[in-house]
Structure formats: C-alpha cells, structure tokens
Length: 257
Image (cartoon, rainbow, N blue to C red; front, side):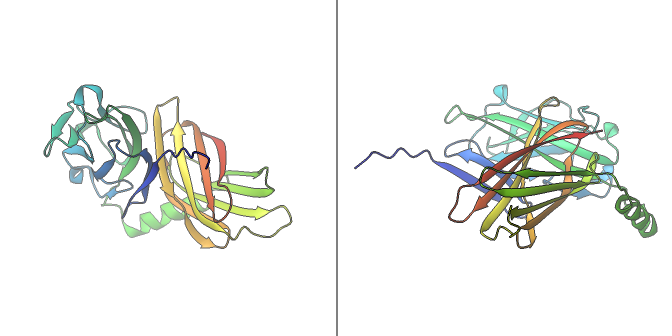
C-alpha cells in the first residue's frame, strides 16, 4: 500500500458573521471579536473602549499585535496590547477622539505560546451616524445605485469555466461583489458547494480578510460589505469549491481609488 501523507487543515467558520480562516490544527485561531466582523456601530460613542480578540491558544504578547486603522491607514488604537480573560485574549484600547464615521480595519498577528506558530488576519467594522434621517439614507443608497462606474472582468479557467466577477461601485467602503460561473458552452456550473473571497492589500499590509459569498441562483453568488477599506491595489482571491471536482482558484487584481 502506498504511503499517504496527509496535511491537516481546517476551515474555521465563525457563525453569525461569516468570517473564515484557513488554519492548521494547533494554531491560535480567533474565537470571538469585539467589535465584531462586519458590525455596523451607530455612533462613535457606541464604539467599545477596546478592541478584543479571543483565541484558542494563549498568545505571546511580545510577538503579537492588534492594530485598528481608519480608511487613511492611520491607527486609532493606543498601541497598548495586553493579555486579558485568562490570558487567551488580546486587547488594545481605542482612542475615540481619532474616530469618526467610516470603515475601520482590525489587523492582527499572533504567536502561539503553545506551538510557536504564527497566525494573522484582518476584519472590518463600520461606524455610522445614527442621526441621519431615513430620507438621507435613501438618497445615499440611490446615489450609490446610480453610479455607473465599477469593476467587471471575465476569466476563462483551464477547465473551460468562465468566471465573471463584478464590483459595484468599486470604491472604498461598502461594495457589492457578484460572481457567476458558467462553462464555455453556455451551461451554468451546478456542482458548486461554496464560494469564498479573500481580500489582501499587500502595500497597506491588510489581510487576509475572508468571507463566504451567498448563493442567489444556480452558478451565481453575491457578497455585500466594507471589505475594500482603503485605496490602492487589492488582490482578491476567489475559491470555488465544487462537488466531485477540483476547486477553482482565481485571483483578480483590483485598483481602488
């Protein structure tokens, strides 16, 4: 019998926020977050005093970090990382005087005391103005829907699948991401189990930010969120998991101004 070498990997799904992390067994994986991924906070005053992440293993604070940055890549935390809650959580206090409405990225990197491995990731949350009237909100939504600019690209994979990827309005902040998958003969791809997007901005050292797309029709998926939290070049990796076939992995390079 041929020897089979198996490398164990797990996808950790944090229910309720859709955040995904590809981690190896034994690493320090995040369990809970405050603020939560994709959370919309109704005012600066309602923002928690600290950004806190709990892990499955004890982090080494001297080789770990949590940074909370605004859309201008400016830190809004006080760079005072501490171990809390039975030493399996890390937190930094937030300087609310530096915060306003907008999108914020929590970027973290952790060294596990148990196994010495490093894990990293990012997620976003938003602060809005609860004093904006419903009429103003509707007008803002209308203005967004009227934007004709956006990103759209077709790619044909080696196994004759055409991926069509669209981003609207393709700006910093909230965007709608759409993906369709069809064979070159025109039939849609029906055996898709899951579709994931992974966002990385290497120049700004943001990412990976990973989330699952929602299915709205056969071979068609969408995702809405503030994943493009800053300008610059974003590498968006799409993973299409198929039943009975290899996964499709395709990267799109998207410039956000």
